[in-house]
Length: 511
View (cartoon, one colour):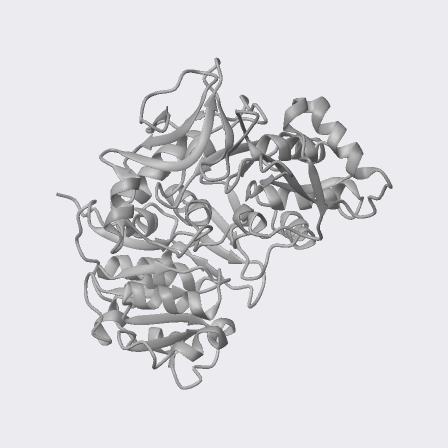
């Protein structure tokens, strides 16, 4: 059996194929370093030796709380080479959530960017399973200095693994509760590259890729790491927060051909472009979106400004990347497209029976990139992973033409006058109004204790009007139907979101 360790395919083969001197990662901020495929192969071999020096063994776990710099891929691929399991952790969380994750995962070591050290410092010494801390990109402050330790480590040979061996963990975003440890195997990285990466994104060796979504997010891990590395392309990475102005600067200076965003960022970029506060001069070959369904209006405005359509798709941490997507040249805005080759989909009602086209059901997906389970959450694993099928928790309708239309999370849907209402449909209608930047819709109870839609709306800069609330209600009535309009509209400065850009409607329901 040839070595099925994912690092053999994604890292080590490139030097043999003549790409050793080609940049694999280029930093857009910070030290603005770059890393070639050859350097990544050499440094990830040293990383495997680093673990040997510190007595961290195969199948043991290390927490990776590292910003998007060239250090992250060295730690990630070096871990896989050593058979050590890296846990990519969201860099935008609070101390108590980090404590939950570190206790839950029982990681033996923590790699932490110096800029994030203050957030986790209160935990160090409190968690007995955490034996060592290595600071990345700065002073060690009494902890191990990652850069110095790596230089002192000798290269270790890559371990042979099977495709089914646990490779890495991601923690789900925890948009409705505590984060869950999602365990993925070596073979899943290549599976997503061979399916979505090759057959929908169509990434090529000549591409320069930029993903606004970070490495710690399943969507960003595929966009910025496994897909470009599967073909020997180059990725631009940003350690800081993606802002509209910063994104336009990166697009114009680094000239990526492939841009991977999320709906809230595309909407903010559109508002900037529409206001004449910048222009995208780069010729984009491919743009994709995921994280939440893309409102049709956002896609149309983006295409008007850039000439590049957005391929909106749906993925999950549990499936590692996108399994349902629009295709190049066949985009239907307002839909999530069709199944990605290599994945099967079905829609079921609350009894598990298939629903007909035009009816709403929960989306289930079958594909070989499915996670093995949630760590130490057997009941949740059993209700999510049903044999070959994975429950997504998303409600969809399949149109007669076979395209899927997003209706909302299972727990976001509600009935008005006995008919299911999709919050997303009402939100889409609201943002087609010229004054609206973003909207979120939740159920609220009226004077007769019946559920009706309530909207939280963020207006575009400078948008005002005495009767704007009534205008928006009438706009929705005319767009999608009399009974679906929001009975109440609350104007807000912003909407609560997860670190990955998903609107947290449950927080709005609680208000």
